[in-house]
Length: 162
Image (cartoon, rainbow, N blue to C red; front, side, top):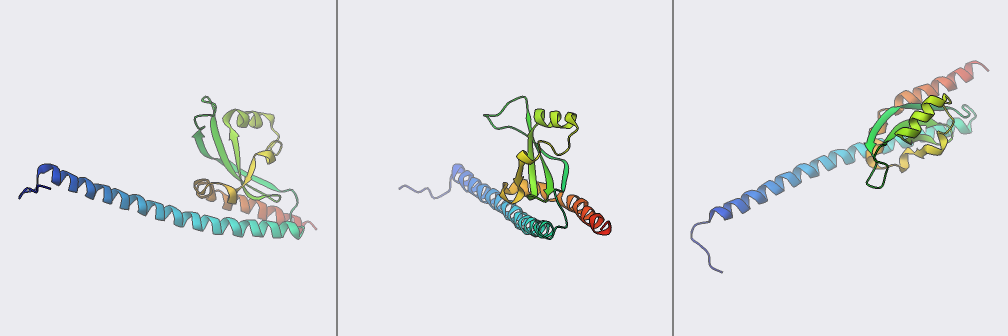
């Protein structure tokens, strides 16, 4: 190998590119760590909520209660999905499933809205939130407190009416 006494301009560029790649990789790794921490916190909160909902249901404090939030995630379907539709996802809390994600096509969601039957057709679209992707769990987490408050109010009303 022949070495020049002075580094060439392309040698400086390679070192500069390597430094940039390392800095960008470090930044990406930092973002991944931050998201991983959010996922861990979301998982702990979802498990606590699911456990409390199951217990309330087992004690007979709530039967067939359901609270659904607003649309939280709007995204295009993948390459195999319909190009004219969006995939819509919202958080819900049910006594049957705990914390869930409800996923619709934009067409199905519009039909459901127009039908005026708030609970019909929803249960088949529910997926336990703990089984959803990490990004979905984190995105829907901020909607769960209001839904749990709704469920809690229903339980409190049922206790005062007995």
